[in-house]
Image (tube, rainbow, N blue to C red; front, side, top):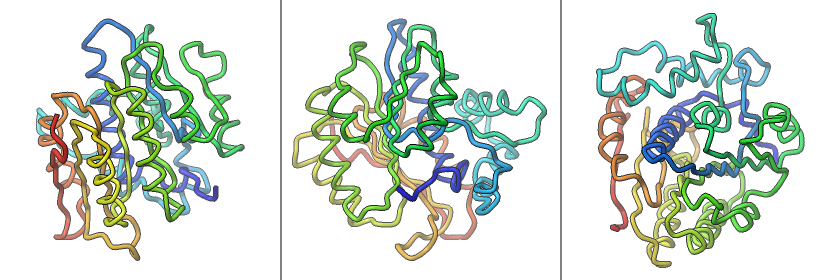
Length: 282
């Protein structure tokens, strides 16, 4: 439990994760009926970009700072605008000092009929998270292990919604834990959307996770990644990927618009790139 997201907030991985999370939430809002978002590794919700932790790494300067300053095409700007509007609302003076993590982003995008469940195991981070959402009847914060949460809270009573999974990736069997937990969760809620974020470092483990999904009979699985430079297990994170189970039918087309433009904005070397693949059909 040494990982603290504050050191990495707003980085290239957050750019991908939060752009996608926004598109997923807005898709569910096409129907009037409410839905639930379960964030299994919630963190603290709101991050101070002037804190000791963020200044120590400065990773946000290679991520969200570049995105906020970039000129995107009208199509990409339309897809990114709801997410960037939330960030701008957290920084009313125009200077980027606060970054909304997944919990706060989801909450800002939600309607009155939508609900949010947040689990966080780190004691200090949970205490901070609970304060951010104190007295918010649409949000439930729980001090609980993520994998227990997947087993306990699925399916949600709303029957619609998504799970976002972003663990610390500190343990050698992390991808195996994800695969096992997601398979169990999917069997309880075969219509739910599961969004898994991961760094592009241990490619072999990522492939094994995907193979597990195939072997266990999961359907309709999309994966994509975004690399600002070539990645290897010994380097700092130069790219990240996401695997989406039961993605909205709109997501692949949206990512075909966003990924090349985000890649151009965030690239640091000629080895930058992106990819998208439907790895399991419907």
